[in-house]
Length: 172
Image (cartoon, rainbow, N blue to C red):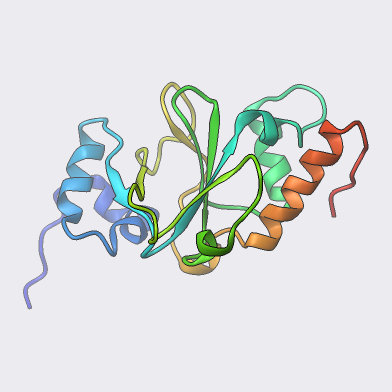
């Protein structure tokens, strides 16, 4: 089988290759990224997603709610990859293992997996790590074991809930 030439720079990016590895037409995703667009990638095959409102996420941060502080809050809990901030900065999307969405029932959050009819993630360019526009707060995973675990996300939400309710829940 002949090796196809690399046409788009994102074809060399490990996270981009991982994201499009189960996409029917990966070339179209790479082209969209080159054009500055956020292509829709189907959820439920490679990963599921959990949408968290900004108020819930930012409650896990003490002090000023900078991107660095929010990133550190995720990392402290054990989430090191796969968090997208929406264009309006009102939603954080966490990439989780496939199947997680089926059993996820946490009030105030929305899970999306293969069972949902609207199961797409608008994925910003894999190297887009700050606004304007949607961006990856935490880097794109480049392997399955870098997806957030449900237990880590539940711990994050517990810390957030403790701070919102006036308590001080210590992170591990």
